[in-house]
Image 1 (cartoon, rainbow, N blue to C red):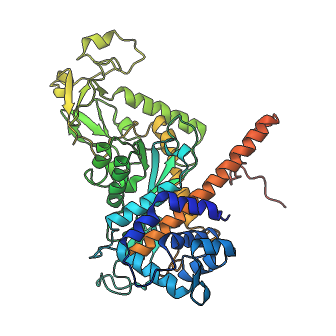
Image 2: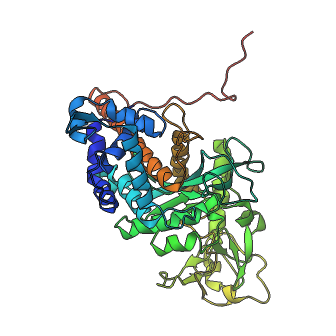
Image 3: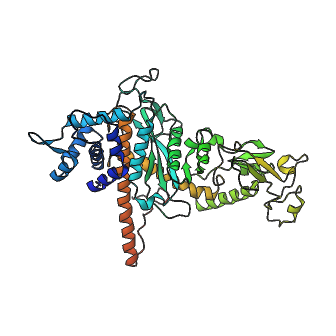
Length: 496
């Protein structure tokens, strides 16, 4: 599905990126025929038609436009000897100037602040105003981008045709224990998803960045998200898999909490279950629990894929039972992140002989049959204080792995669909060879243009679906739904 030229021009002009780049470029003796805005327009046109991000394809996209559009964009200019059409040498010259202006003086595998800012503006301009504040939740993930340059030995980093590229690890179509190595970059991205109990929104890309495989992709995304919050983007739920939550709190969780975001993450197997104590309370899955909590409840893990309704109901009953043993919030969290937590018996969730008032509750609540002889602080005091460093790595919005967490975490699949779309060969894949320019600057510019094109495709499909649903409602027909895929369990008997 191609994107109309008028839409692309509106995005480029509305972002202000072209004007900002032109101010960075040096003035020559003769005025350049190819402007930065025209080059960005050509890159988007080429990517919208499923062409690779080659300068030759960009030139073909521009010279293939109607003559009036070529004259308006400067592809055809009036010279002394008559009309002159843009050449590849001119396209290469303008691209080289832009790359030099946006690159770091000492490349280190991370984008320059100016380059990141311009790419953020370009991506944000591709989102219509009615959707900018439609949701505050983001699903984040990263994928690999293989470099065009030939790989160099791991013992010789910083050499070869692309000195910024590095060896990295990916798990594409392979078991996590196996994986494979690749030579190139990481592309972390944040995709907009609907808020909890909020209206459905199109899954548009809000932010992307690129870093070499020597950098931590989770840490590389933090400045992008904090910059988004500083520019007025209200932080909401951040949905991520265990590849993000496994990072040190200072790298991932704490900076996001500092901008007001709430985490909805899957925990790494090594971070699940009991992880020590605080004032006698058991630290488990980001919460504090009564020291007499049944051990099987503390070992609960998320439901496996394909679980039946009966399994889900039994699992939800166990997580609801576990929540009764959780220490509750006694007062609002302080500005420095400290929390006052109260014993679950004092809050009326369980019965405990150490809290005589709780023994008057109905017997449907769990009861502590063998209280400790020497109660610790969590049992002896009315409340305890938990600092920001307690369960900083695993603390999140919902109890893990409860039914509320499972319903909220399902929204993260939007990031997987993004990764699948940028690797889809039918619409233009970022596999090795789709771009043959070296360095992180041209790579990030091309990927940003690809995200703009992808957002327009998502919007076109969204608008068509909304139109079809409205037409069906006017005709008294039910809305269209996807037919469920027939798996092995629902397959009929084999033919004779």
